[in-house]
Length: 150
Image: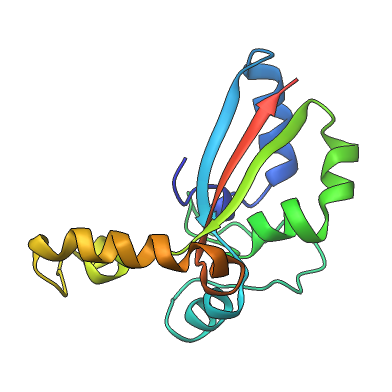
């Protein structure tokens, strides 16, 4: 799933149904917005969707299919409230949670389809991402999350 979880207004219902539907040993793999110093700034100042790491509840009002959001929800579930998530959903084990900084995504125009750089520079941006990896806890905007069904 790419950029889906943070749009699910009732994540408890989703994880319960996914736990029923995914076979033991199966996995759910996600790329989701993430709370870091840079990510918080971008999502708060430059992005149109709500980003509320301080939200007291996992749920939020639904205004239509995937039209509502809390961009901080994945971080809330898997960092801030991880013990609660593990208690409520013992069938899911977080195998990987790795913040990533997608410079290539940003300079390619993201979903706008208006590239800010020429295609031949892809290798240089990939190299920059690799060099920045040790600081992804501060500069990441997304997280690669792998949950395994026990």
